[in-house]
Image (tube, rainbow, N blue to C red):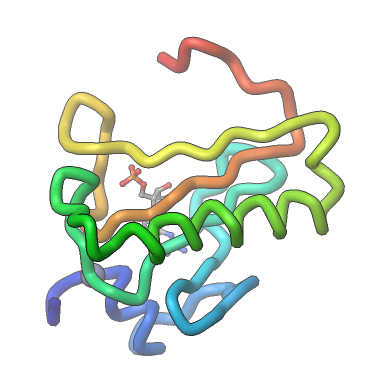
Amino acid sequence: MSDCLFCKIRDGQIPARVVYRDEQCLAFEDINPQAPTHVLFIPNKHIATVNDITPEDREVVGQLFVAAAKLARERGHADNGYRVVMNTQRDAGQTVFHIHLHLLAGRSLHWPPG
Ligand code: 5GP
Ligand code: ZN
């Protein structure tokens, strides 16, 4: 998707603080962090929303969680805890239409969110 912000980050056309990369996914610091750790995990493949995930995407979507849990462990958040969330469409406040798993950690997180 030529006009997709996260495809441009994936391709290096827009800079980002990349913290993890493998064959299937990429992770970078959120530009407007909402917690001491706020990292976005995206599939290299452009998938607009959770509604667009297909059975063929099972592995890459699973890999987003594997990578997020790994980084959470490495940053010492495994015991205190963290949140992983994928906002979908308007009511959830999705603003970038290339799926991304938010990893939020390092402070107490309220539930339910606002
Ligand atoms: P959403 O609301 O779609 O779930 O989350 C989009 C996230 O992308 C937001 O947390 C926002 O701060 C982040 N974001 C938006 N533009 C950029 C950008 O250019 N670079 C980075 N690193 N994060 C961005
Ligand atoms: Zn994209």
